Image (tube, rainbow, N blue to C red; front, top):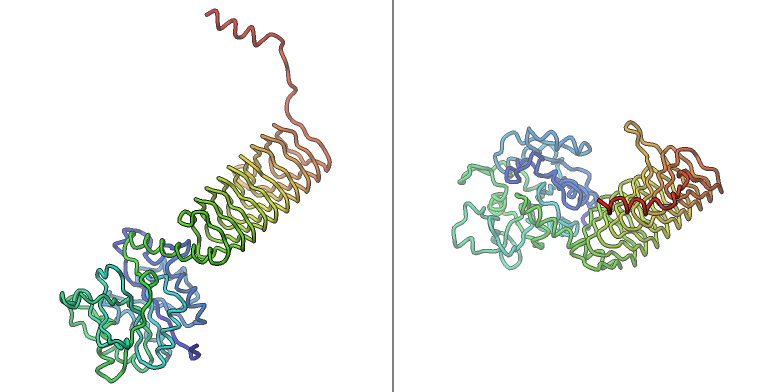
Length: 439
């Protein structure tokens, strides 16, 4: 493993006009995380802390989201070599790893290969062989991977375009080759300074360049919403494979969606049409039934969620808990063995151990100005169609009768009923029917 330090420069100055979005391209998300954040996470695994983001002058929104790294500005869109030189003061007399803000899925293992290859050559380029080479530049290399030149798509002739080894744009440049960046000229159809010209210059100066190949899904760039969807698909496929390999059952893998930080324990069982948003951790042997949506929540072992459940952020569900169909839980804790089986809303609440919540129970936690907490202590039983008006505490082993509206604290072991008395009017139903039948 490479030990000496290097600088990472992420080029992200493109305006992303083909995305047709007010949001900067590199802030769009894959697996619930921005494209730039994906790269920063990968660089963290490489122990790289010397990171610079190159953006355009108008991209203050992007810069503001990443305050802990260096920032450089490409004043005019004059090409990739010009963008890289915009960050020259952050090279810090080290080798430079060049990444692109719109290519988020490059893996740590691939970058590690590039870093190791650079011990023997001066420029390492990451290449790929997509089924449709489209408008990617073409890499010309021998059977040992040594590159003679890279030709941009717009500069390539029909014969050169037959080559299917494509340039991802990402490269590792040894510090000895960095001065050559200033020799790159804009003698091309776009009048831009192409970073790819560095390879030819390196060869001219007796330096070597080599290609490291990786799968297309890993190096695919994003320019349009179609590309974004394709990269999202690749991300999800990778996560699905990882989950299956780690001992999680996915009944229909293609219908389960993960986020960048999803964690699931062994022997968990995920039914179809489940969406796991950011911040979700499932312990071992959790059963998530079909059509459930979970985000920002922790689910304890041996619990059952769904079907058709929605678990919202800041929810902690402990072991052996059941959350059933059409139940919504928000910012609440459910302790061991509690059950909210169907058609209920539990918000800003704490349910102790072995609390049973009947169908149609609502915690009324908001008065239009403030949110209030409901505390249901261990062993309490809440009947069907009960409204719990917070702030409120239901004591240990208390029972709330069906249909009650509870506005005051309930002592432990109490039975609470707030429904009006039942009035049976004898014969009234027959008289009601007879009166309408005669019309």
